[in-house]
Each structure stands twice: as structure tokens, then as C-alpha cells.
Image 1 (cartoon, one colour):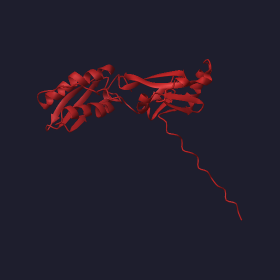
Image 2 (cartoon, helix red, strand yellow):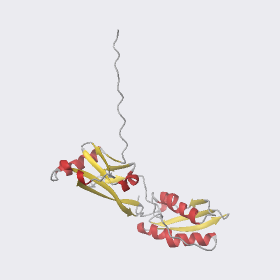
Image 3 (tube, rainbow, N blue to C red):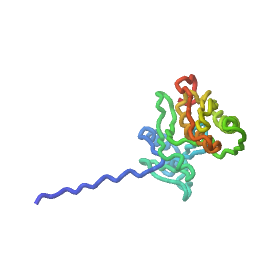
Image 4 (cartoon, rainbow, N blue to C red):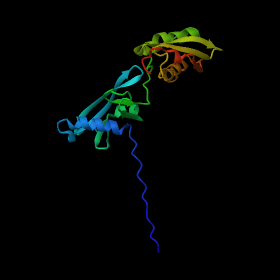
Length: 214
């Protein structure tokens, strides 16, 4: 009777918020090796704020024992990664990598998640639909966009339910500005001016000459 080989399926990779490319891992391990007692250290990655329309991060080597019960701790290869609990959701799906530009040093975090620059608005509006949208843009939205040299303007309101908005300055020609409009400005306008059910971006993003983000 012929023996039948039993095949064991490879276990699926554990889902983790931040993955590290092989190239970045090699660089991190090289830097770690120069530290005192490297075997006791892990890489702590935390979201520490917002910079423009991106998250700001802090990366540091810390002793394994400094991790709290709420921190997420896991291994990427031989590297222990420690992520504070309040940074996990913001980092989910991100990748720690080397810069794509030749000769550029350091590490970069490629993160599909974006902070909402318009969260927690304290808004009081009055007047017509157009006036309320203008107030929202002037008082709340444009100060948030100004951190990366951008601004938004109301072009027109069509049939009392569709707002046409254009973005300029650092937002024009910016690949991230469409996301900012869709996820931030559109949400804010619909929430605070409920008559508006549709927001249209009329920006010519191909015309931007020197956007903050490419």
C-alpha cells in the first residue's frame, strides 16, 4: 500500500498594524546592534501628533520592560516592536520602509490612514446656505488647511443641495488634497450645513506648481 504524504499548511502571517520591509528591518537591526545591551531593546513606534495632513511619529529604542499591558508588542523577524495602544488604529496597515529617493537616508512610514484635520470643530453658523458654508470654510476649515499652505473656497451652490468647492495654495496639485476634501471638508459641510447632500471638488489638481505633498 502506497504511503500518503501529509502536507501541513503554512500558518497565516499574524495580522499586525505596522509591517517592516526587509530593507528597513536590516537597517534598524544594524542601528540596534550599536546600542548598549541591544538584546533588551525593542523599537517603539508611536503617533505623537499631526503634521499637515499626515500623522507625526516618534521612533525610539526602549527596554522591553517599559511596555505596558495596554501596548501591542510583537516581533518582526528578530526585532521586538512596541506600539502604544492609542497609536494602533492610526498605524493599522502602515509599512516602515526606506525612502524611495536614491541617496536619501533614514526611514519612512507609509501609512494609508489620514488624521481628520477638521475633527472636534466648535462651530456656530448663521445665514443662508452659502453664508454658512463660507463661515465654515473661513473660521474652521481654512485654518486647519493653512498648516500645509492650502485653502478651500466655495465656488457655488447648485439647487440648494450641491456645494462646489475648489482648493488652492498647497492643496492645488496635491495628491492628498482630494482625500482631505472627501474625508474632511465634505463631511464637515454635510454635518454643519445639512441642506447640502453633495460636495463636488472643482480643483484642477494638475495645475499646482509647488504643492507641499506630491
